[in-house]
Length: 64
Image (cartoon, helix red, strand yellow):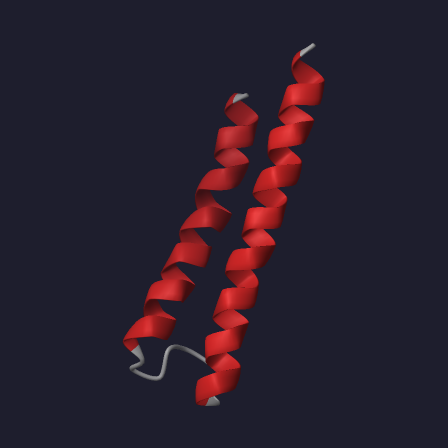
């Protein structure tokens, strides 16, 4: 019974992760910043949000 619930959350969190990645890419394209954050506060924030998701989503799924 738990496997389908975990799979559902894994799928939803995977989609969230992709959305966060596309948000970083959108700012990178708009500002032409290829590497790092270039001192752009919005890009820095989106990079960190995406990074935190990469760190915590696998751990949350493992705990399920």
